[in-house]
Image (cartoon, rainbow, N blue to C red; front, side):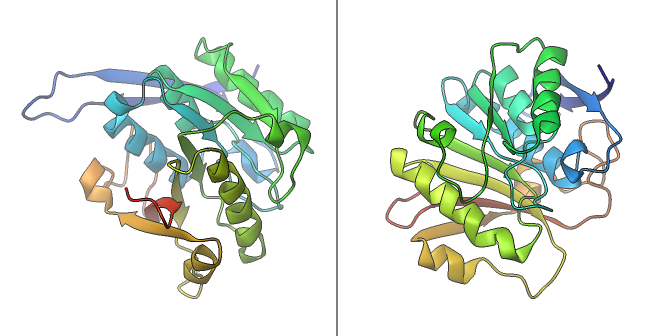
Amino acid sequence: MAGAQRFRFREESGPGAHGAVLEVRVPQVLHVQYGMYVWPCAVVLAQYLWFHRRSLPGKAVLEVTGPSKFPHIGAGVSLPGILAAKCGAEVILSDSSELPHCLEICRQSCQLNDLSYVQVVGLTWGHITKDLLSLPPQDIILASDVFFEPEDFESILATVYFLMQRNPKAQFWSTYQVRSADWSLEDLLYKWDMKCVHVPLESFDADKEALAESALPGRHTVEMLVVSLRKNSF
């Protein structure tokens, strides 16, 4: 198994804080495929989950995070999903069905955190497959930095829309790194009958250059979105 990176999430001091600490370990893999890294967006999304950890137990959570250099879903090393599972959510991790090594990295993340019961499935953006059809309804869909290539944006939202048809109250929690001021999801969200709310990083203690005792997200500009079907309210 690869070496491990450690991320420690701590409860901020202040009224009601009890000094809770949660450690998540993920494989440390140097690989040419983008899905093998812990990207800046992943630690920000994990921090959002940590901040809302008391509402996670019992929730069905599907992680589809990872850069979309190729048109595929990819959880990579699965930092947000692993944290959600350790906080009591019923988690399924996914990566491209065409990249078995990435699926193995997801399984290694589960092993490192004593979460061997967490299911790992192969899914592909925009493809209606047997594995996608067999997924149970999800409450939360996690995605860190999937909005990487504009040509993939609609395939991503189409897949999320399909998943939301199983549970119209489901939410899509996503972080993305700002790479171009010209990129926008507004028209696609309207087309797929979705709406989104931008969540300020300071509202969940993520407005820092270093989170979870790591060097991430550094000076990268990361945004947090919560997306739902237009007809439902947050």
